[in-house]
Amino acid sequence: GAGVSQSPSNKVTEKGKDVELRCDPISGHTALYWYRQSLGQGLEFLIYFQGNSAPDKSGLPSDRFSAERTGGSVSTLTIQRTQQEDSAVYLCASSLQRGAYEQYFGPGTRLTVT
Amino acid sequence: GIQVEQSPPDLILQEGANSTLRCNFSDSVNNLQWFHQNPWGQLINLFYIPSGTKQNGRLSATTVATERYSLLYISSSQTTDSGVYFCAVGKVGNEKLTFGTGTRLTIIP
Image 1: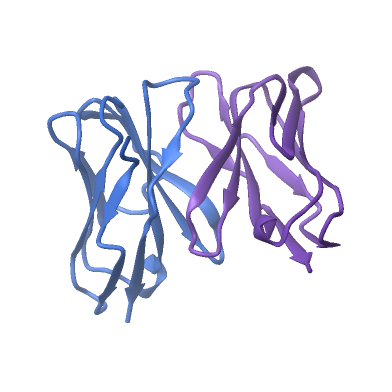
Image 2: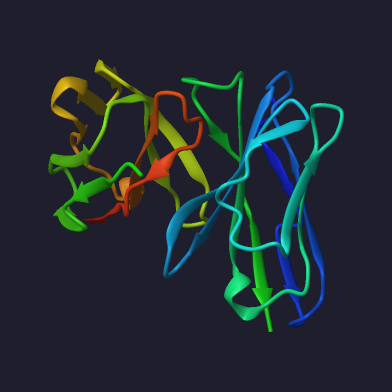
């Protein structure tokens, strides 16, 4: 079956602009996660959704970052007023349910802020 | 938070050699996954192994949860095994995965 998909695959934006990143989880997966991978910080957790609610937003680095999930499926990560330090690969993952279930990752969106 | 340490950070081997990658973690976990990140950045699931031993072809993994470590074994290495291997763990009651810093494996023909 189809895996986790993300769009766009690459995004170049100017400092100060807003960007939206999209994630389509595996069909039937109720839990969805956002992570990012940057050279200085490695792979780090951003936010987790169970259904449409976000019980854990602890990894969001600032109030410029927000995310939503609608219909228990697609999620959008929004970064407002982008800064150069936001440049990273943003990865989305999904799992069948919350808890001790295997997470499957999408191919990522490479964000470059110039 | 939980700490995850991987060793060695870099490993260079000849094709056909065997290797052992180690992951130590600092607290009880109910989720442990091994990933291979390919040259295009995709994280490929290798094992979901919070405890016990699993094998898949030339790869196998063992997690000793009581001693807080996991091992990934790669036998008869091939050049396509090159890349970065990540261990990631999840604590009980905390759904997020915490990743180690990875082991970069380079297989020389």
